[in-house]
Structures are given as C-alpha cells and as structure tokens.
Amino acid sequence: MEILNITQKPETDESIEEYAYHSYEPITGTNLNNPGEIRINIETQDLFTHPSNSYLVFDGKLVKNADDAACENANVISLTNNGLMHLFSNIKYQLSGQEIERVFHPGQATTMLGILKYPGNDFQKSVGLNQLWYKDTGATAHLQNNTGGAARQIYIIQKPDPNGTFSFRVSLKHIFGFCDDYDKVVYGFKHQLTLVRKGDNDAIFRNNAADAGKVVLTKLSWYVQSRIKG
Image (cartoon, rainbow, N blue to C red):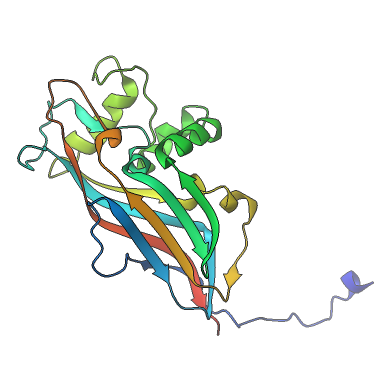
C-alpha cells in the first residue's frame, strides 16, 4: 500500500515561498469622510490571495462636532456597538468586475448576524472590542447603567492619548457571508472592495448633554494574505 512506502522521498513544493499580509489603500484622491464611494483595488492578477481571511483596519478619531476638539473623559459619547459598519450605506466585493456579494445597511445587517455569531460575553470581553463589538445593556448612553456603552466610552474616549483616537480591525468574515462559505485561495483575478460612506449619526452613541460629535477617518487599509506566483 502507498501509505506503507516509508522510503519514498517527500516532495517539496516551493512555488510559493512566502504567504504574508499586504496592505492595500483606497484609490488616489478618495475622501474617507464625505458621502460617496471608497474603493480599494488589487489590480495584480498574477497573485495568490486569501480574501476570506482578510481584514480592514480603520484609523480615526471621534471629535466634537462644533470645533473638532477632542472629547473629554466626562463626555458621555462614544461609538455604537459595531459602529464602524454604521458609517456605510452598503459594502460590496467584486472579482474581475463580477459582483460576489453586496451588503446593504451593513450596520444593521452585521449587527443582527453578529448577535448570532457572538452570542455570549466571552467574545466581547476578549477580542470583541478590537472591532468595536461590545453590546449595550441599556437603551441610553449612561456610564453607570449601560455596561457596553461605558466599555466603549472608556476604550475610545478615556484610554487613548489624545482622547477619541481609535484603530479598529474588522474581519471580512464579519461583513460577508461568502467568507464562511468559501475559505480558499484565489488566483488570477482582480479584486475590488467598495464601501459607500454615509453620515455619522447612526455610528455615534451619546446622551443629550454631549456635543453631537463627528467621526473622522484618517486611514483605511485592507490587509490581504497574498503572494505573487513564484
């Protein structure tokens, strides 16, 4: 039997020598904070990629709407649970011009899906806050009576220096269903990820006394495991 052929020399495939994450940025001239499309392209077709294992990194800040000043520790304002997804009206993924999946109202859609995927408290108390996932325990922004809202306020407003700055990592599996269904390497395609920016209102969670607030994205990167064919 072939499995008993212990003298057979092992075959070594060195056609792919490295498999690492590479970052891709929005196309030149993109404004991250005006309503409209934010497109990130991967043009190289001679490339092995693993899109289902990729992720987005959002860098930015939550500031006062009136004068762009930093929020103070006492300000009862933060981002909503899953707030980054609430910054967009729809998100779509394409391969060589063919639409693979589009998610409308991604804030609401991924929140409902997330409640099913992350049902307990273990996720939000471990790595969940890395993608701004910490569920509310009350309907209002209150630091004493809403554990989730308080955790997000501390994480975004009180802990950073300067106040209000953030960097969150959101897996593509959190957004698109195809990432769970197709966990394979892709070769020979152009990739395009499009996020349609909208206003900040749905992303901000505050009490009536706090300034309206404004979300300013300073950088958006798509990290994809990729390697040019060796």
